[in-house]
Image 1: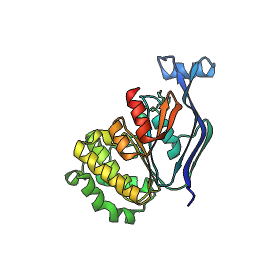
Image 2: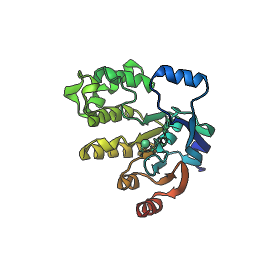
Image 3: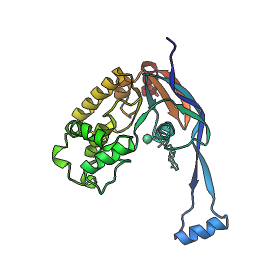
Image 4: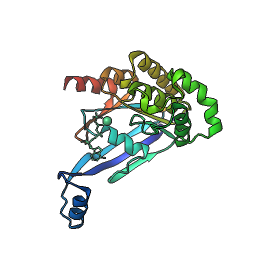
Length: 244
Ligand SMILES: Nc1ncnc2c1ncn2[C@@H]1O[C@H](COP(=O)(O)OP(=O)(O)OP(=O)(O)O)[C@@H](O)[C@H]1O
Ligand SMILES: [Mg+2]
């Protein structure tokens, strides 16, 4: 059977404008902006990135802080549009990128479960069915009526992971979300990720724990200053990365 690309990243570049000036007030900024006196430094967070991911594969993105991993994942999740180049995604995406990005911190955990479900495309009734599973997996039974702003970062990540993994999305994106969970919870998440892989879900995974990346991923994209430094089999590239 011919392998089918589920994600195609073609020559993607992403430019951010960084303002290097400081302004004393918003008014000063607006005036200078109108007079075109604000200088922006162009910054390319991604430069000519290309790779493909096949259905059911697990791809790890590795690289130092600021190398462009989260930016790449956001373009795949459709949160950011690349400045140039093209990203094609065939299927549903459950993104776990910025911790608690889909949460309203003033709402309770219970309310956030339904809010997040809606963001992921689930109706209220469907979420009712998944509710117990989410509470049980996150182990936050006693905190459902607490506003999420009072949660620790580990608790936020438990809840976010439990919600994002209820169904079987075609693609699951996990960016550093596990690193704030404790060891036991990380193992539990890994198990769930593996189960989803068995059901054909494609995984995009970012972690600064190379051991974790190596154990979960088959393929690796190694980013360096927004460029692809290496793309290939996990064992080989993780070894090279650890020695660099
Ligand atoms: N919205 C933005 N505006 C300006 N610059 C940005 C923006 N988002 C990211 N950047 C810059 O792009 C570069 C890549 O950031 P990115 O978050 O993708 O790195 P990363 O590889 O995920 O790093 P980390 O390992 O720290 O999570 C950084 O230099 C960052 O400052
Ligand atoms: Mg990041």
